[in-house]
Length: 159
Image 1 (cartoon, helix red, strand yellow):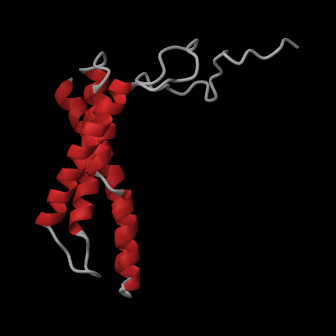
Image 2 (cartoon, one colour; image 1 turned 120 degrees about the horizontal axis):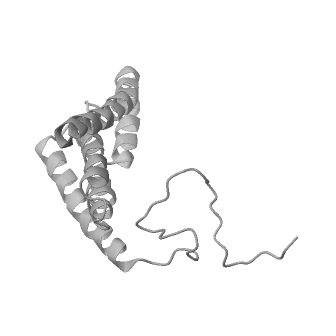
């Protein structure tokens, strides 16, 4: 058996897509810090977080009541990630920083799993278990449907 070359690239998930923003080719050594990608993700994340804050301010809710702002934010973010994926693949495949800026940055900063979890716990603490369960599972289902709707609608418009 030949000795293991520490610089040899090994694909741990053969047959699955590789993120082209951080992995160039099969023979590239371990990933290095990509400062442009980091900068656009950070800038997009700040913008997305500001947008999420604006939605939360526009649609406040009392503790123990239904968190409409978080639901709207997460479902809209899911829809937009579906739209974005089609646009990046179909129209902007050579734009290396679009997906990190819009997808990971803006939409990653806009959507919020942590607030979703805290809102669910708050509903449970307010002795609203049915509402908490409806919110917990409903957000998941509606979010997944929103991704598919964003994909399909955008595919129709683009093609």
